[in-house]
Image (cartoon, rainbow, N blue to C red; front, side):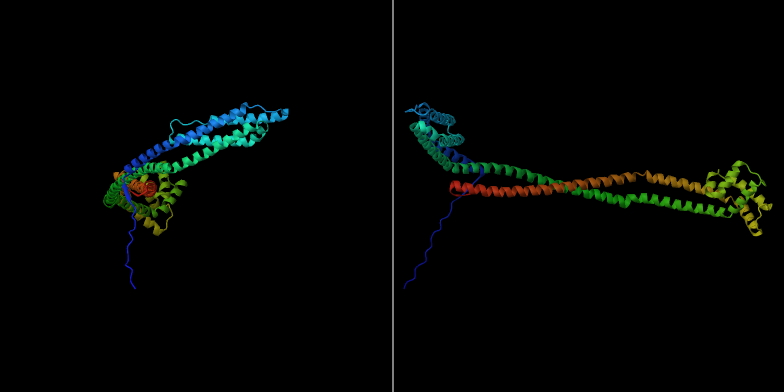
Length: 431
């Protein structure tokens, strides 16, 4: 018994060719030129065969066109056969007229020639099928010769088509390499531009973020510090309005006890028991209905009110208003106090001063440049935020575009390497 020694079989390795895009394109173009050169050399005999077959068909159709019946035939039968012959002759000549042997057999010229040959063969075979049997009734020999030459021409046309297809597969792969290489250059150019644009957008976004941060900080500082001035003005207005309201209440409170005596005074005037000038009567009416408005509408010192109070004092002292004893004494003291102290005149001056201050402060608040500055800062922040949002959207779009281009580049690389490997017989790797 013996043990067989293990052996290692050497696994063949596939050659790998690392090529740049320029090298691959140059190699593909060179191979394409060489292949076309070999094709031109090989195709000459094929073209000569087709040219010879064309001449054979041409001679046969000419013989058919000039043939005469060898024996007497019925007129109607001759008419039918001659008509079929003429149709066959015309269609054959028209088909043969489209065939032109290329003098400079480029690939495209050969493809065009192949198409014209196939079309001519198909047209003549169809014409033979339709008219041949009728023409053969009168011109049997010439018709059969024509059909035989057309059949041979069709066989050569089919073989020529197979010949070009065999060459075409190799040329198509070389052409595919050229097209894929051109597309690769376009992708790389677009990708470089997109990456530059992405880099610019990233810098722009960083710049806009800094600008937005600075603008927001400035706005925050303004709102935290500068607006204190506006708030202070607003508080001053509120305080003045509160003091003015207190004065209003004090004026109203002062006149609360005089409303009834003033009405009785008005009634006494209407009854003719007492007389006042027209201006004083109108002011009496106003003091009854709206004491505050009456005080503000009077001149400084309240001369009409003082007149009315003196008249009212005289009526009360004279017992002409019919007040009760208790109210009689109370109103006398109140009126005498108002006339001696001048408190209402002081309240009038204080109220007018407060209204003036309120108006001034409100105007100062409304016309403050801080309002405009705040609007400017807020607008600037909004504009910067909008620009930043737009730049971010563009960056997302650009990133998507780059992803698509990179995916297309990977697919292009795989396809280009695959086709190149098939053509070159070695694993091609683009570098």
